[in-house]
Image (tube, rainbow, N blue to C red; front, side, top):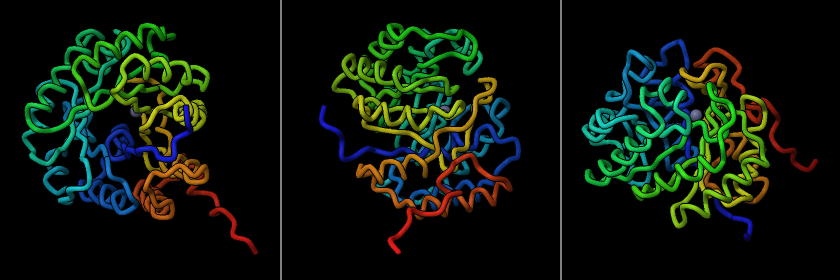
Length: 303
Ligand code: ZN
């Protein structure tokens, strides 16, 4: 396979990055994060989720965030939804361009995360994609716990590929393999991404990694080498999952973009602006964020 010159980058900071934060971030600061991300070149961004505010209080302002999104024809706003009720809410805002549905590869995590069995989460994701299309939006699916489960441990690669084939029947815009708890390793990523691409072509494969055990950025590289064309990350490396014990941050946007820029893979992103945004967010959060590039000096200029 020829090495890609271009990768589509998806910023998930406003949703996956913030959802696990205990201190509520103001709607105004969420909107600033979204605007700054767009200014840094982001053209696809997960802006919020339409879930039960009692379960995820940080996302209780989903409708308010959507009402104030910048009017941009060139930006795809993604709303994460877990069921038909969430899909209806997202569609009703009139501001969401794309529904992001979530299926889970294992029963125990599916029940903890969204009160569905794995099979029910597959059916729900397929109907969410259908609802998106019927409303004139696009719909994509993320398969959580593809590389390991916080409750069931090992997840069979055959099982993940079979689930992706079932999900592909709904003809989503793409299917993402997600390492929700950051247990994956690059050899596993190479195998699973290659097999999934073969199983669901021409539907593209996106990847979503967490850096819980330091393998996140290596997994991104392995996924790209194996043919994944779309990569999620969160500014500052923020993130975690309220229903996955011990899950830590997403792979960090500016770390991923630094790596891809230096490797001459175009993402349309401005690294300096991304680093500025990460520094700003660190001030808002009043703590050092996990990402590394924002804490390092820029690539040295010749003296
Ligand atoms: Zn995630």
